[in-house]
Image (tube, rainbow, N blue to C red; front, side, top):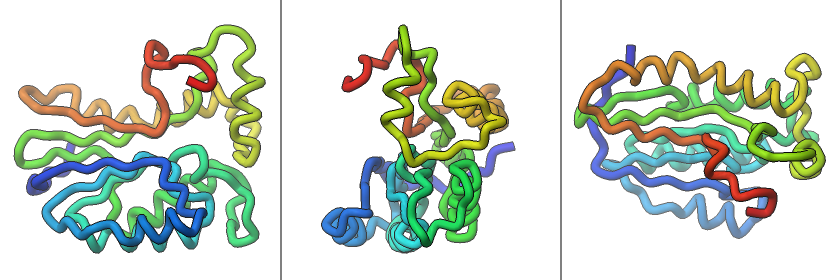
Length: 196
């Protein structure tokens, strides 16, 4: 069952903020307060857990609702302050931080019959003809996934499976507008190739 919340006035969306860069952090912390609006953060906030939490605390105070899904850079395991042993552990820790702060990471239906559906995702090698593993591995050298997931295809499949209850929750709804979002392309027809 979907949580139903009062509708925001507007929905804003950002991604690829890279607040590890000081100027980006400064600009993102200076986002204008929009207390009647919703902000979707579609990944790539930063790789540093403390900065991630600082940013999320900031936007939660400024917007009525904040939604989030992780991007590839959010799941890099590279800093000493990052206690995650792998990218999957890091993702679940981020989702727990989001839950504690009131950042929404699941499907919601607003009172105006608009649904927002965050979708966890990862690179899907099936989108690429030929040897996709070469460019995917070179693209995210700091992501460390557990071996039991079986590489990028397994990661993509596992994360997609975590979306099933969110997707099922909106499937039977009639006369609703559904806004889904992820950090990665949801369909192969949208992929223009490496380098886009």
